[in-house]
Image (tube, rainbow, N blue to C red; front, side):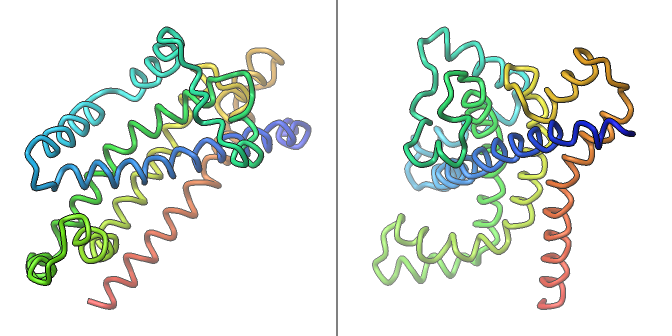
Length: 235
């Protein structure tokens, strides 16, 4: 198990890069998922059709396929996802500003894929809001957007927070695929580097990689458990 201590810097760097990937993807998925949920419950049929098509497509595609299209399809279309090089943001998340675009491609793939699950979680939360709340808001003259923003979504968030957390946990675990699509330095690519290239024994490396993912997923799971307990007490 000495490899865990001897190469701690490598594991720590992989954990930090994976954490950056997950934070950016989770933020993007929450924003896009909220838009998708709004489309799904829109009173305008074409918008509902767009939201339904998005969810149906991405929920039924394997993430590997989405990653493949992001990593190889976007370059074929002439895109390096430079729009993610946001000034200031690329200072905190330094890999956004590099000339290697695969980190940005992985963010796009994870965001698009996870947003479909986030959208359904939010839609389920919206359905849990009593219909009278929305009807009362409409009687006051609020538009659909105002009703959604000021009345429905704040209440839906309470019901949706647990499934949202579960979607984020799944996204963290799914991020392990990024190393197989050109992202160098994350936890999954660290495993390949240490075992295949440097000849380190597999078992201690696997333990270190597993510990890294657990450091990200266990706190989220504990938070969700505590939240469920509090909600059970308040009922």
